[in-house]
Image (tube, rainbow, N blue to C red):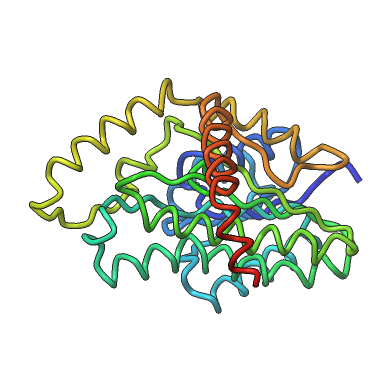
Length: 274
């Protein structure tokens, strides 16, 4: 079957919108969620019944299950589920409030978890499917100023790696997409900012300088759509894939440092063994 049915969260802008367009352009069906579905009006006009807009706040578990069921009932199956909805939270760990921390995890972790859980029964029944989680290079490395964002993406990485092993025998694939910096509004209008403490004023400046050095030239969201289709169409899609030029270098440096650190302290590890 060449035509696929997609379910994508966070399609009002950025990756989600570009990926929905790429799917529609090649003749696939898309259930596209957004907090404000009016942002999808132009796509509905252009693609008609191939696009099913669904108003959704992914932090609402009941609404997540209802949205996935609606997509399945409308199109008859679910082939690709992309958990793209999420945002960045900027603030040092001490600066982040309880409500800000919980909101970050509710969207970036639990929203993806509920959508995943809602989709799995349909995919298990049809013995096929592909779940893609939009993580980040920040899902395997960590830097100052975005500690709770990192926490959310590391959690997403953890349950998704377990999930991949749990559902493989049902013919279901899981892929973690780990982008670097792209020209989306992740750090713009969509981002949240904790109240800065005076004690961290200088540290904030250093963190922002470091972020600029690591980011390099932002990636192109439209180009990412072409890359995504290669992952989607792969016979054996990867568990993890970087999007952008910067992540591989960051990851290699981070993991080399970890291994060196673990080896340096291996005597202590063996002593703890008893």
